[in-house]
Length: 188
Image (cartoon, rainbow, N blue to C red; front, side):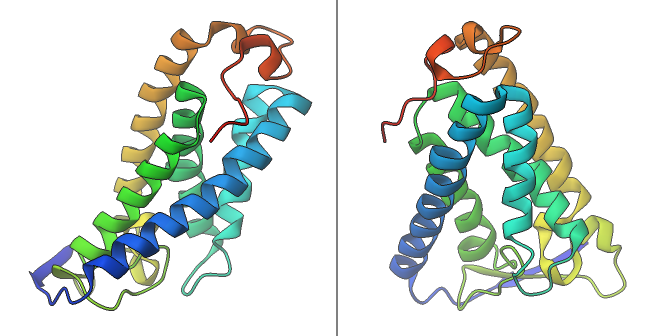
């Protein structure tokens, strides 16, 4: 559903900096602040759902966004990145995965990242004209596609299972915060 051609990667240092900065800022806000507060107030399961929806909703202002794209990002990235945070109790895994995801899409494959076009990339990819928007993500990019949702959801389930094994106290009925299981510290 995508064409792939050689691109012109002119400023990889900028791309690394930009994807790290975006990953850091979004993860600090969504995981270190919002997710932790939601866990303390409501427990893990509601925190996963609500923070993922906030994460997806935050991308509604991006170019070519839609409710479908926001929901796709909520499921594939919002849940997945929260699971990495639950697994490690630290923000850095989520920041790294987030930055790597964006870097691979934009700087390497030249696809739109959350609806935004990059300035240069190793390859240039674009949806094949007439291809299914469900498979390509359309003008928003691959993050709004069904394959990205399936991959993100699969990673979420695998990491969530590992997090439940690593932090069993957090998942007990009635557990309302990190004080029960200690995985979600305010440490960077």
